[in-house]
Image (cartoon, rainbow, N blue to C red; front, top):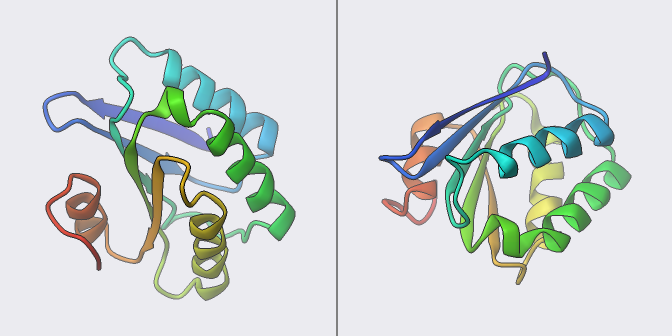
Length: 130
């Protein structure tokens, strides 16, 4: 499976793991499943681990995903969504930065990281940047 998640309600954190680049439909369905999970509450921080993913999303893919995030911002709640990219995947990191720009002012603060620990700290509110 390309996508899986774990919810830690005590930490107020969702950890998403990705093994490859899913289609938008697969990603959207996955996100709908996450939002429907009774353990998920709006405002829960998200850490998306893409370090094993080798694909690079296209600009169109990022725009579609960002549009979904903006359209579902109330369901997601005001939260932080950290995306962890392999440090050698510069193009993928850049595309997440595009996503940061496209989701500004949505209530969902998206940010790219290369360190899982830094991403978890920022998402949980313990740190402001990597």
